[in-house]
View 1: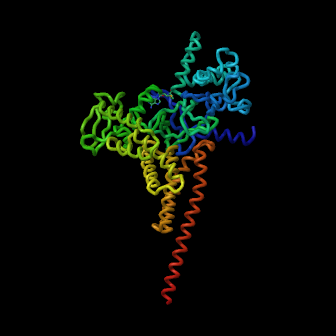
View 2: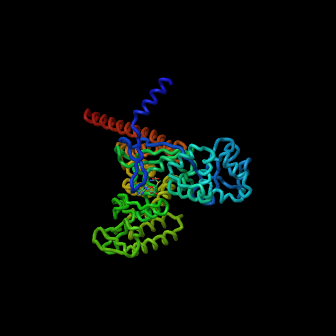
View 3: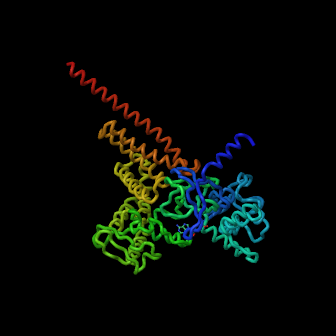
Length: 503
Ligand SMILES: C[S@@+](CC[C@H](N)C(=O)[O-])C[C@H]1O[C@@H](n2cnc3c(N)ncnc32)[C@H](O)[C@@H]1O
């Protein structure tokens, strides 16, 4: 053994483990910190044991790299030349050691019933099939999966029953993933043996990234003390408690009792709060938020100001009417969207999750205008205000490092820079004031970078981090120019004063 190898082994032996596996009645198996972990530190990094399509939405994927495929004239461009079934990006994906393994190819080839015409059905079962095929492909890994996922089987269980069992295991344990390079929906699912042991909390202390090869990295999003539980959020942090809890109940089979779910006002984020119809000043929150059905008649909701009580069915009726109003909105007109938000703010807390979803749509519309030629000052200011509003909620539900916060902080720098430049051009502010406003934009960019630089280079957020770095460089140059301008103005003023004195 070389010296290098020895020292590597010693350091890995002496280094405390970042996490430990423990067990409790409530969580089953879960992970705790094996040492004090700093925010941004890697807790674990791993490759999936199986990855494939998740929600099936009429999309076709390359079976080798899982990129979404574009169909031309409803026809696939390329299929695997060996099995004549698996859609692929092209010959390159067929050549490389992708996810379409020889075992998978063989099963398509051997099975007369499987043909290209049944592609929708094949896509639907691809992930459990991939997991099942590991049995023949990698016996050791298969045994590890059996142990780690606590698969139960007996000799006379039929293959279809066993596959059914695998599907259940996948539902509970898999991670929702994006197709490589895409910013949109989480259309894939991947199974990771270590990361799937992390327990859920609606206010997590980890941040997870996945690269184009589906390698998953769990970072601490906050400092985690030794022996503290490591949590990941299995659901969306920008939903109301009832909706998050329903998602977890239906998809992961447990009742969440975390600090956000327990609090009638969701730790001050008010994601489910309704404006009190009586006093119009306070906000109405569920009095027993851990009830499985908070929108039933016997569930009580109370105003935090006038203390008036309401039955859950009233809240449900308000939500139903509002969803119908939102469905009627066609989504293309900024003015209509602004009007709808203003109208709903009379009945809801501004942070209500239904309003937040509309505000994110509005933000996208403002962003489009602000990035275009000569945007109105009014729109730039509105974009900035909306970013601040969403960021405030995110600070409560996604403390520390967060992808959404990184994006929001990045977005905020653009209106700040535009407003500073405009005000200076209109002689409303001095170069010094401009430099201080640009510095504020720089602070946001730096905070955004601290989060976005953790993202894989080729992911959409990784590209954003690259842009943010370039913009920060330009911004620093503009700040230096503004400060030099201020200095030269001050010098010429003092020269003038001296000359005046001499005269
Ligand atoms: C992805 S698995 C985690 C590993 C699992 N604990 C095990 O022992 O295999 C998800 C399951 O863990 C349990 N779990 C995770 N977080 C929980 C929480 N906050 N409260 C209750 N149960 C939880 C639930 O049983 C859930 O279905």
